[in-house]
Amino acid sequence: MELLWIDLPLFVILIWATYTDIKSRIIPDRLVFSGLCYFLVIRIGYADQPYFHYLLGVIAGAGILYICALIRPGSFGGGDIKLLAVVGAALGWHESLIFLCLLLGIAGLFAIIGLLISRDNKRQIPLAPFFLTAFLLIYHFKVNL
Image 1 (tube, rainbow, N blue to C red):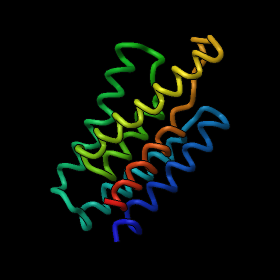
Image 2 (image 1 turned 180 degrees about the horizontal axis):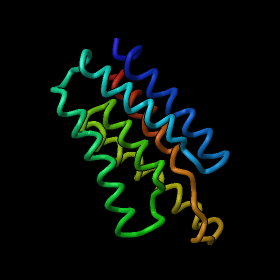
Image 3 (image 1 turned 60 degrees about the horizontal axis):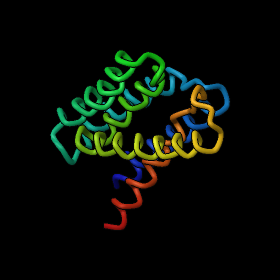
Image 4 (image 1 turned 120 degrees about the horizontal axis):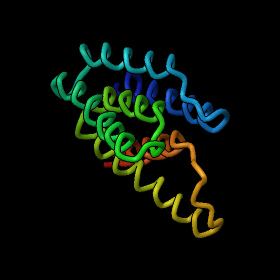
């Protein structure tokens, strides 16, 4: 049942965010706001953890990226930070931190490979495709375990 109410809507949001991030380097606020509202409301009635875990997921995931963006301006965009808040609301704090580690690991590996190939260290890459990749990996392991 979690597939229908949590995983499928999160998948759709991440696909949309990936498309817009690649196309225009923007993750629309209306997408993020509607996703955040949806997951915070749906988790009231359908939760496998205490509700505050989902609230902590919003704060923990987005908070970590926000602090990184404060320490090193330009490292993460506002849309990426808000999108991780949506993931935290959908998955809860523990799984959103695992998601964040996986996301940053995949993006970092991609950046290192790109740097070795092009030697262009000023190039910025959209992060939403890595959100989608991390979600698909987590979903694959969740289904197969």
